[in-house]
Image (cartoon, rainbow, N blue to C red):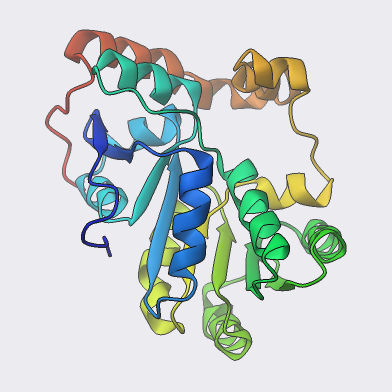
Length: 256
């Protein structure tokens, strides 16, 4: 899926190749891709996802086949600096897509955006919020609680809508694997895994307060808000330790 000539400036963090781009640069590239007639995959990856890639060679290949992989986490920013190839900034999914919407709105660039994920209530709130904020764009979607037997009917709906952006919020790595499997069966579009962003955009989940964001402590806020996440958060010290032990270089990945 990678586009020849784009963002060859990458940094390898434990085998995952991150593009060294700013949010503004990512926005420009995504908007360009919405009109180039091809399929594209965008991945925003933080330390937890990098550690998942350590356990699966196929997942690592999938991520590294993406057209754009951004550093969605201060841990990745730190690790890239340890490699001597710093990324200019964090580029988070929850902020990147609204930046794309704003740019398209300002340029009067008509975009169709399809969202797949979250609960029915949360999705409806998100669609209403986005349509109100960006009235020149068209939004549609389907909730994320569907059975395998419903996939074909959902894809039929997506094809009929013919989105420029197909945003899937199923959590990692499921959303990236889903996009890998279905993108080629859809009209040309940019597929992006957005995790829990649909809940945030719709206002059903509150993002960390500004002070946590400024201090790069959103992970701590999420842990305090959802103590059940503690097992997932164990990936953070493991990530840091592996970066320190290896200098951030890739090691042998288990084959799955």
